[in-house]
Image (cartoon, rainbow, N blue to C red):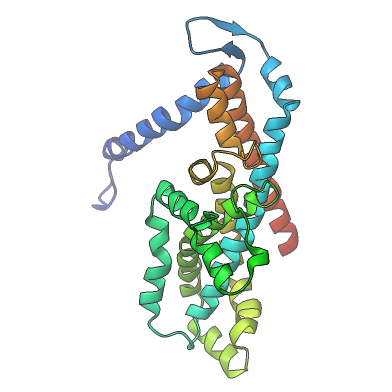
Length: 294
């Protein structure tokens, strides 16, 4: 007989878990299984579905537009790992020092972009990048740096850097909060002793804080990879994947194939391809992190 008043009955536990599990199965697992099924068919959305086996996957393996989109996703991931996590870590070091005043205010300001809609962020940065009226080119002109003035969203050579900047800007605050929470778990005496020994500023961040929150940094890297493998709305608002396909990413390519060209079977194959590549990159990043730690 169980006399523990804090022990929850199994029936009550199942009752509480049921809504969450049902939603997860209905909105995540079921669409995933359906997408996998449709990936084996040639289907334009009508009643007729023709089974093609692995035909869509063979086509995907030879599709240059898909691999160009994958390359663009990799560029975004690398830039965001450097920009989002790098800046967040530097700011974390600054927030834990005595140099910065009004820390609560600055932390709130840094987090505000995180809650903005991706559509709003994309629209704002489209205005910033405007060749004739954008504030970026105006600042460069005022600084007599006319040589740096660019058609930021119209040049295929720089467009991926341009569309990555809003992503970096928006999510620095999110990773800053994650890193700050991890720093709170560090024994304060460790930080105090490091200061007494003269390890301050960037050295304290490099030799004390970063190693002690390395597990959190690994989680942040995985979040950054998974988030940017499915990036869509920012880039869709700013360039629509252009000029040409120079800023097309995989999620946008899947959308274009499925809902503009009505190749739903092949679009499902692209979605499954995104899932496989995302899991592969996350697995590789974890192995690299474990090897570096060992």
